[in-house]
Image (cartoon, rainbow, N blue to C red; front, side, top):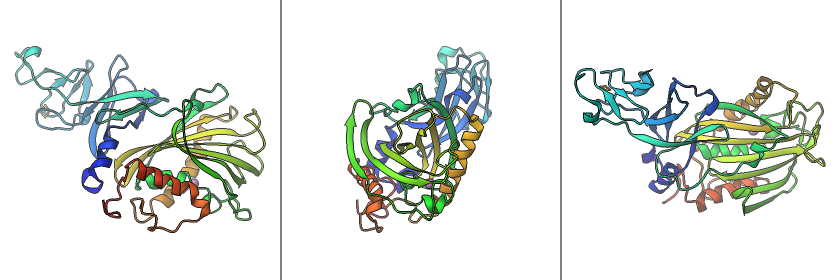
Length: 348
Ligand code: FES
Ligand code: CO
């Protein structure tokens, strides 16, 4: 159980946050799927009116998994004794007592909050404390949206976000694509906390330069690429990359890639990527395949780091100047009281 390996405060905070659980456009009327969020089994289903519902995946009668049932006449039917539940969650019919009127039935499935934003469905197990962070690139007309994933990883969320923020692995993990072993140095870059109306708040790094053999699907020559990263939630980070010295022209690279994590268990994570690209030439499939290749290279790293849970104690791992953003991310987790999954490594 999640709560046994992370501390109570972190768990409560995560419980009251929004987490991505599905892509809205492919969650079709009359379908359901089982989802795990923070160790909790849930069923997400879409009714005939295209409304989504996020329920505890547990029938109030004898605890059967509702996600193994069926949807009939816009109601979810439990596979064990056939109780039927309306989109409101209320039981409407019990086959063994067909004479009972709906008003006299008390069974009701436990429901959780959800919302749709940036094309994803986000769920919250508790009481949401705030909105989902801003992602203004999502609405820019000069970009197209491509969803990647979900990717399932046997790794903790903070290890995955930290890897996303890390540039010095490019020549090793993504050699020939995002990195070149003849140009490996990382020039100094800026890291700061930010808070504004456009981007929300968090930490960001700017003016990060990287020499890349193939910076994107459409790149056809090596180039110096400028990155800007921002962390907007402990489990959400966004990067912008552009050809250095160029603004977002149609020929130059100007991509935003955002990574959003669904914490399944402390060391099991489902990752969602929303790309906002200025590449209108390639098919979605080609763009997705390019990102899949990179993400699978990262997966092979983050699944093999020890300890699995990110240590926030500054002495636990050795850092250097080029790790400045990762150090800032660890501090950010600490100041947000999100000592997620580190109970074994810190005296809390
Ligand atoms: Fe669901 Fe009995 S357990 S109807
Ligand atoms: Co990588």
